[in-house]
Image 1 (tube, rainbow, N blue to C red):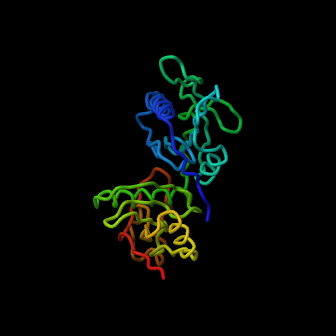
Image 2 (image 1 turned 135 degrees about the horizontal axis):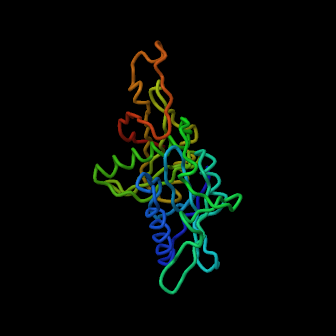
Image 3 (image 1 turned 90 degrees about the vertical axis):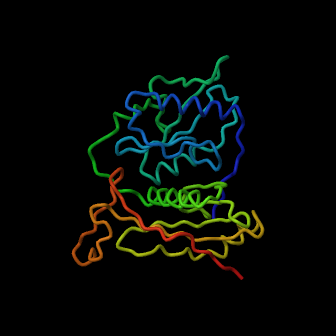
Length: 259
């Protein structure tokens, strides 16, 4: 079990975050950008993240004048970038009398380790990159979130670190509920529940007494095999490549019972 600080954010940070996102969105080539994280709600490993081509970019906003409270840490940023085989970036910002502005030209990004300027389109390649387990886990959480919202329930929070549980909270018909999400690759049939579910339940009870627990398994396959029932027999098990077509099977939430 790990804890992520559920930091609150200030209005000033929201303003800064919005200006940072608009700088990225308005860059040449950004019309092909696909946002991964585009909300300013805790918990934070990164403040913004997106996919461009076959590359992932994770961004932490920093105030060059050190006057703005910014949630998250460089360690959290590096952990998610490493887990997803992506690029850890910082985006230096400065507050002017009119608004917050990036201090780096172009996309406004610096490599978090070297502090060299990053131009995301230059890093795109033709390489086929297999999705990491962390990426697939994030994809699974997105699937579960969308189904929860489609059922009319309100999301409370979510985080995409596969080593941290639960994966998300939402307001169910009788109050707060939590979900442990797991992703699995075909030809496996269903994800295995973690062995420490009782410990997860105890932790959630301390946070929200009486909350209900759920498990969600999301099965993924490449569109090139599309759940071929004879995949193991005929070898039709195509890798899940980043940015390529994928299909999934999700049977809904499984209610967990604890005594």
